[in-house]
Image (cartoon, rainbow over all chains, first blue to last red; front, top):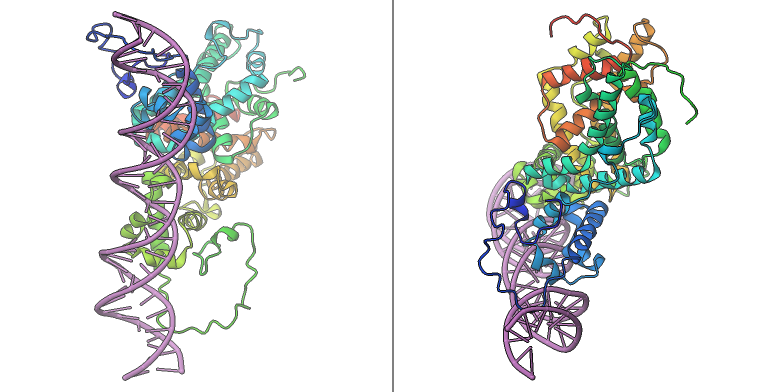
Length: 228
Length: 228
DNA sequence: ACTATACGATACTGTGGAGTTCCGGATCTT
DNA sequence: AAGATCCGGAACTCCACAGTATCGTATAGT
């Protein structure tokens, strides 16, 4: 389910577990084959447009033009605009944060700061713009809220949880910390800044978030901080 | 600017300072007068619809029907859907939080907790829904972002700033606290929960936000907490 | 070679909503 | 009383976009 759909079960794909595995009547493949390398190109184009103009501002022609594809090619793969977007969100790659190799500098502050990389900032900001573009859809398709959250902010929160749990394990911070809540501080405040204040997120903002909010909240009040 | 506009300068009203004060040619009032008591009714209807279906889902007919008014009556007062919405946001009443009489219980936790009232929760949640409905518009009308923020989350943040400043003044928390950032913790995390997670905000969530995040962040780790 | 399908491109259809106009009736000024 | 403007309501025009169909071309199986 992290790859584009081969059929048009985008909506069901959020709940179903694919009931047409191989028993799909005789495929009777005939004629030119569908070029599935275009799927991710179209989905990426959809995400770009979504981030720029939002769901209601997005047109299928925009997406097709961005992907240098025809409109019919889009509708041959997804039954509707809504399903295209749902699939695009569901297939969105998790970005560059792989839970298996997170920074490990020995201090929570070091870990958090070293997660701030130019590419990470840019990627996070675009993902938040996508979330903003999805906003009007979330009320109509509540299950999409879960999928969008899972693809956009949960990965960041999960990384924070891991780093904080490590800090607990090494005795750096108290075991009584409400990690579930504390790991959401930075994601929510960044979302607030990008989506509501419409202010760009930069390294300095993230550093002051760490030093002014997150670290105090976990009980690391005024530790010596090496130069940024 | 907290009252509905008499003319159609909604867009300019965000930046301008009314350059047609009284020199508007001869008014030559003739015929039936416009019933300005309908203005706030229409604006309130617009805010309700906005909270329910968002800007793009909202139609002028919905607003007119909700306000039991004719569509022409709406267009006689606002030149376009966009100006109606902008005016509705600009005229949105600040709710029930009046900076002149905030709670003063003697402790920061007492003050924060006593700001949690059923009406306050309901009002805040509706305001956040309005913010969500405005989302798609914020990218097109950036100055609206400022107005919406000023009407919706800034009042809460301002109240938090005052309560925290008092706590500093009485020596309860450190003077080194980054109040500007800390006062935004609860508003942003509530916004994240309502707009992205689509989970209702209840008293228990707010209490655990105060005890698990805000108070630790200001250095009040594990104070004795009276029963909620 | 023949057939069936995919491709990009373009034209077409249908619908919904923004904004306008008109109606009959009410309310104001002169 | 008369004219002008308001009211709620409803019909109307216009346009953008979702979705479909068609075209000429490319690529697959048989």
